[in-house]
Length: 58
Image (cartoon, rainbow, N blue to C red; front, side):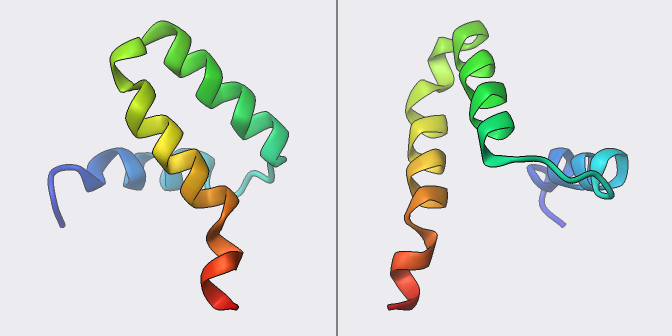
């Protein structure tokens, strides 16, 4: 496990059984960027990657 995996593992252990919409996730990401503008580029890249994930299969 990498050091950066801790947050992912915490997310899974705390909220792994929940179901959320992509709209909810988008709102949470926007709130995060509003509070932490220095992460805007990384969050935007992640959001773009999620939005286009199915394109890789075609």
